[in-house]
Length: 420
Picture 1: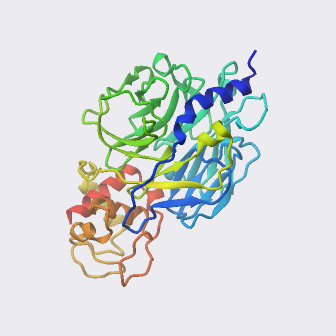
Picture 2: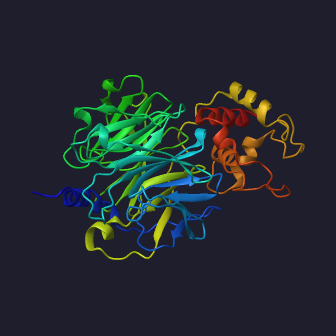
Picture 3: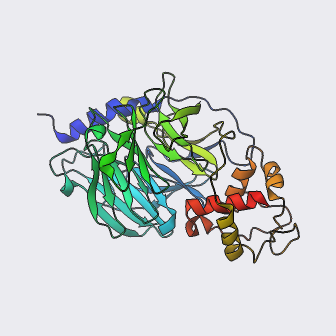
């Protein structure tokens, strides 16, 4: 009889070994770093997010369970140290509720036979634990691997379980249930993996071993369907770009890659608009409009066992400028601007109030930072005001709008500013 811990390691190895091949990256020219080298040995970060308010990357750790903060200079600092975190996989920043959501599973380097499957919920600023939600009790007789997590605007979290073949839902009060299961989520090997909420209407879920992308309506998860793709894609991490494209980490014959998918029929089908090498990537994160993917070096962890001195968070450039602009409502954006921004910025002139006047900002924005479109620059200025400060002005704009506004409200505000 194969012990659960050994079966866990064997199954994990078969899937994850493909996500470890190093490849070179092309250099970038703008102000953001091409690569952040996390200078800590053997912590094997599978999940990554960028905390714009904190100005740091956050990662999990398959071998330590700790959540680490990584600065641009490569300094790695423990952020959340919780004895109940065994191996942290996918992580997700819930901006609306100022929380960090953490998928927690059995540590592959440990010999424990006790199954671990839970969602850790933490304050994004202090790191204090708010809740630890167990999933084993929902399915006590199966193998578990909570893999990725996302959230909707109501504070509901959705967690994929790659071995159990289900998606869990955890409401804002910490109550857990099996949200979605069925034939489309059942796989031999790694099943449900990367997961994203789209417009508070449905989930997009990668089912790795089946090389499929599944659409799951939030109001009726039994009515799930397979998204028609141009080719089979055994996706790992998923990331929804501000322009509406879905970015998928996937294996390729030459190593891992990041694939941009686009849909014009509300994700009944999708096409590939770009794909770029993503060395050893498992998951990706947005920093403004820039995309970074973590090289987890899983080939060493599950392959030859070699020690890894540092881990790279690589910037991946994708040709997304031709994408349609975010479908924001400029009229609603104007209302948001008047309420929240007009005390510091003029909208009808270039004259300085407290900050610069914004009339004609769409023209100036296209030239501010090389590599960023006007829309990308405006969006970055709202979410990461310290990333680029206009000469002659202090870095005084608060970095709180990402937590104050929903993604849709950010789209509305961007649409309004582009109209000035």
